[in-house]
Length: 533
Ligand code: C2E
Ligand code: CA
Ligand code: CA
Image (cartoon, rainbow, N blue to C red):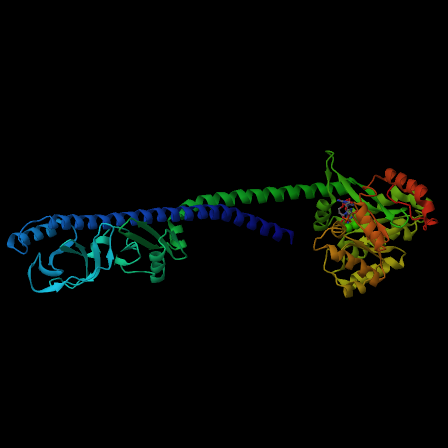
């Protein structure tokens, strides 16, 4: 059982150790890869803008030169001039001359029938009209882009505007600043394109990275699919492997170290049981109405040979795991009898509560041992209370038998840490109990607006329904005390009254309280008494 758990814990540590550095690296690398892709795309958009701008500027320059010509329109020399301008202008396909808004000749030659000049779709800041989708008679069927300026137009192949060398999955588009697409490669996500035309920006969505660049005449848009996570990780895997391995190794080392420590603590605990290194402290239990100390809860302490104290929440579970708990409980009983015998014999109304482990309750062994140990001591069984947690009640039949026998022997039985577990009211009704100890967490909640706060009241009601008396654990403030008194909780323990004390200090506390508050029993009517003075 323990071995399996150790192995499971080690494996878990190793996995975490491997995964945490890998995930961290992954996170940063994926982010870095994303940032790099976005930078690259932005750069592409800017290059595309530059390209479109250059093509436009070249076209405009050619148009200006043509307009400056004084040659006889459509003469051989004039046609020659237009041809020369077309040849020398990148991405220009054809140039045309208009007279009275009619195209009468082009760089190809005179028109058979003049064509009316169409209305441009868009006018640039330079006064250049732009028309999309122009299909000249002499062309090869590719829709062209026309720039009109003065008496001339120049036709350009729009594909040349987006003719930028990029990664194969990048798509480019050029538009007018008012959002008209002028040239584009096949569009991957039309909705996104519409969006970007309306509101140009750079960024990314779930599937696509996008970047835009803009000047007065043009808007360039570049989009690229986001690299799938797996693909972006693959080239980085070689980086993760050593980090993961290192993390796993560190985590395994930590797990081994922890389990060694636990093993050594376990060995030390076994020795401590053999050497009887345990002693007891006693925390006074106060009758809340009167302030009288009616007894104490015994709390075991372990001081190692080097003088350091180990907390019971640490070594009790370890003793339970390793089968040392029964021997430990036996020593607790011996200690309680040795420490408290005189006091219990002198004050028959006093009691000491002993904490039982789950195993002590379900086996029923603790009772037999206790009965034996009490013989001849003069301590009455009524003076020893036993505290058991719900963990001891898992086998309810055995728990019931064991608790019933304990009560028959004259002991009082309390359910400890009540409210922390899951016991239902019906479940508890089946158990022969005398008292209920309300766990400190519920006392802490008193007077706060935490979610636990109303539960405290329910627990008190539950105890009343079951006919049990209640002991509040961990009472620290006068406000908590006032609340408990108002709810008729019978007993309490906690730092408000006293911390756990060594045996002699507890005896002194007990007698002093008796002296101070003994009269209170008779003076219960006196409303001015305060039990914490
Ligand atoms: P528990 O039975 O709930 O004991 C109450 C714990 O609350 C004790 O801690 C006590 O010192 C602490 N306490 C009491 N009043 C206050 C308070 O006002 N404020 C605060 N903050 N704490 C308070 P301790 O002595 O460390 O014991 C821890 C647990 O160890 C106990 O919880 C009990 O479950 C276990 N234990 C202690 N002694 C024995 C023993 O002899 N046998 C067994 N089986 N378990 C024991
Ligand atoms: Ca207890
Ligand atoms: Ca408790």
